Length: 324
Image (cartoon, rainbow, N blue to C red; front, side, top):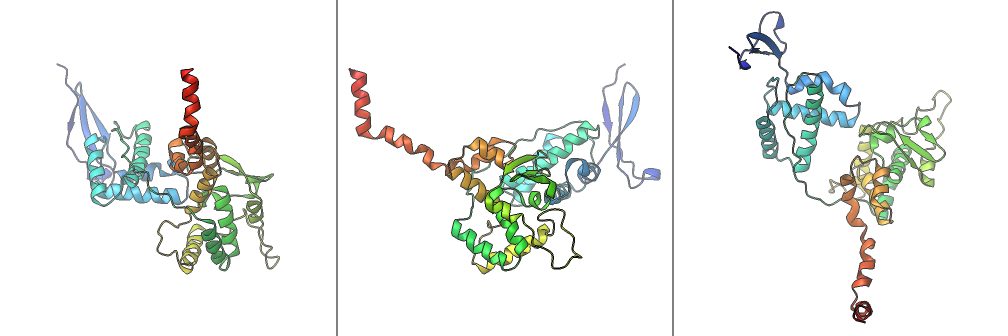
């Protein structure tokens, strides 16, 4: 008689395996096998260094996974079903997470589970449906805001000021700039190797971006040249300087004026200047065009010529020609 595969609810919590992952017992054709179980947190500890490079993004992912593990009460499993995914989304929404935030957290979970599945640790994968996101309003700096903010930052730190110039004229992420080394810069171009997508990109530099790479000479010969133009800074210190300057110029109330606003500002200026969306995508290093399309509404001049076509006095000759 042929037996179908069954799962026996069995927790192995004692003996030599105490404190390790629990197990399920499965049998098929009278052959019993043990299936090891893991919590989300344990999977993250196992695969995090393979999936995410060190930096702020990895720190954020760690926070996301920790919250998901908490919602699941550190439950261990060998399969991850659709019901569990749906319950996670409901729990995150009840905690006040927007759809955009839920998407980021579930993307981290999906990436982790896909890796676990390839390694044979998880034996099925649920479907991760992206939650619908509103377009939202993108904040960017006007020229006068940039001048006031950068001047306030310069009064506190010349290095932080140089970094601001570089960020707004290249549109790179803060971690990408701080991680640069001198060999990444050649002939008025910079190559970003340590990127969020894992794909390198090279962009040309404006004149003031080139000048921002000039590191002031050390006060004494005992100080060696830093490994990169912004290596003397770290993200925490830069953000502290940024927040102090932002408060001083009266933007303390605006929670969207964070260092990442410089990336939005660069993208907005490119689109408003008539650069097509595909080139903007390449410049920013977006993996999908959908990410770059958030800035498309700024290209308002692209529609101006439509008005000329629709003006009534311009329509008459076309109708006359058609009727002739």
